[in-house]
Amino acid sequence: MRTDYHFHPNLNERRPAKKLKAIWNAFEEHHLDAVVCAEHAFKDPAFAYRQVVKSKPKHMRTHVFPGAELVTGDGRAGVDVIAFAEHDWYDEHPRLLEPFTMNLKEMIGYLEASNLHWFIAHPTIMRTPLLSLYPTQEAMQEFLATVPAFEARNGTHLLIEYHCTNPFIRPFLRRVRDHLRASAEPTLDLYYKDGVHRFLAVGSDAHSPKDVGYSVEIPGKAQSRRHALELMTSNTNIQTIYLPNFNHSVRRLFHLGMTGLHESQMRRAGFRRSDAEESALVTAEEGA
Image 1 (cartoon, rainbow, N blue to C red):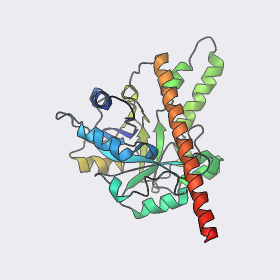
Image 2: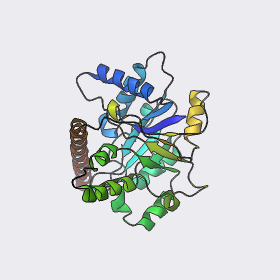
Image 3: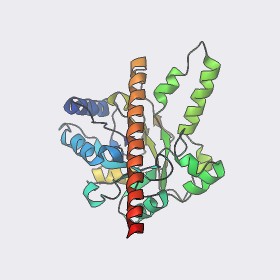
Image 4: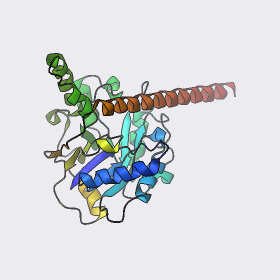
C-alpha cells in the first residue's frame, strides 16, 4: 500500500480548481493508495482537506485522510506535530488548530487524551525548532522514546539535494547534500525502539502537485478505508521507499524557495501575534 503521511495541498491561490485537479492527477500518476492531508495549522487545514475530498474524481481509489500539521508555542517558530484520523475531526478539536497556543508537553497530553493518531514531524531535519529543545543525539533519543510515532523519512529536500550535484563544485555540494539527507533520514537504530513506537511515518512534505510521489510501500493491501488506516497506524516497515522521477528545473527550485519563504513569514507573524495576545492577557490579569 503506497502511502504518503505528509502532504500539503497549499490552496492559497487564485485558481484552486486547477490545482485540485493536478493534485488528484499526481495521486493517480504515482499510484498512491493513502495520503494524509496535513496542511499547516496556520493555513486552514480543514478547508484544505474538505476541498481535496470534494474534488475527488469518481474513478479514484486513493484514501485521503484528514490531518493537520499542528504548531506548538515552543521556541521562536514552534514544533510541528501531525495529527490525523479516519473521519473529519477538525470541528471537534478547535484548540489544536490554534497555532502557538500549547507547548509541546501540553499538546502531547491533549493528543494522548484524544482519539486522534499523531506523530512528530521530521524530528531531526535541518533547522527544525525541535533541535533547540533536544540539541544532542542522546536528548533526542530520550524524547522520541516517549512518543508513539515519528516521521522517519521526509522528502522536502529532494529537489535541493539534486541541485547539490553540480560537477564544478561537487565536493562542497556533496557535503551539503549528504547533510540534508541525513537530517531527513535519521538513523533508526538510534531512534526507533521496538515495542515503544506504534508506527513510523514517511512523508513527501510536498507543497505542489509536482512534488508528490515520495512515499513508502506498506506491506499489505487495504480492503477498505478503515483497513488502510489500520495498516498506516501499525506499520514500522520502511524498507521500501518509492522515489519518483522529478522535474528538477531551476524554476521549480525557485518556486519551492518562495513557498518556504512565504510560510516562514506566516509562521513568524502568527507566533508574534500569539505572543502579543498572551502578554496582553497576562497584563490584564495582573491589573485585575
